[in-house]
Every structure is written in structure tokens, then in C-alpha cells.
Amino acid sequence: MRLRALRGAITCDENSKAEIVTKTQRLVEELLTRNEVDHDDLVSIIFTATDDLTAEFPATAARALGLGDVPLLCARELAVEHGLARVVRVLVHCHTEQSRAELHHVYLDGARALRDDLPA
Image 1 (cartoon, one colour):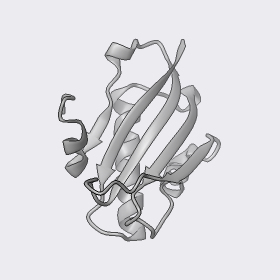
Image 2 (cartoon, rainbow, N blue to C red):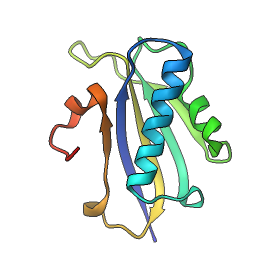
Image 3 (spheres, rainbow, N blue to C red):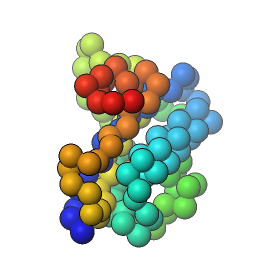
Image 4 (cartoon, rainbow, N blue to C red):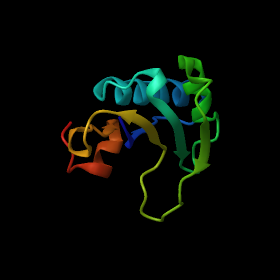
């Protein structure tokens, strides 16, 4: 087993608690499923959100998925002038047998534009 990092992002349609929770949970579930990461393989998860998402912490959504015993951290994304709006990003540290080339980073909805070099 090696320590690896997985990246992902998703856009929200609005700045509401329900939207941030729903979209963050979708992103985390998809990232873990595509990479066959089990709960016990998780080391930590870092979330960032753009300045226009203020209604909820993305980590709250992860805790609701049963990840409360995993170290979670929220931070602000850089407010770059030409950056995409209403984005939650995630960086998952986990143990896996997969090589870096086998990992599947997940960019959903409008966040696909951030990494159009990756397969859907």
C-alpha cells in the first residue's frame, strides 16, 4: 500500500446549505467509488470552496457520509479573477495499491472545465 492523493471538484448551482451538502457528497462518493477506496484507507481530506459558497462547510457533508473519524479540513480557494464560480474542490489522501497512473481524479458538472484533459 502506498500513500496517494486524489483530486476532484464540483460546481454548485446556488449558495445554499442543501446544495453544498448534496454536491459535496456526490463528489466524495464518486471519487471513493471510482478509486475503490474504503473508509479505513482514508488518511485525510482537504476541501476548498470559492468565496461565493458560504452557506455550509463542505466537511459537514463528509461527516454526514460517516467520515467523521477522518481528519477533515476546509479552506478558501484562491479568488483568481478568471476563476470558476461556486466550486468545491477536494484533495483526498489515502492508502491504495493503485499506481498514480491508475487513479481516477473526478471533476463533475461545470468543474469538468477545470480538467478537460481527464476522461469523464
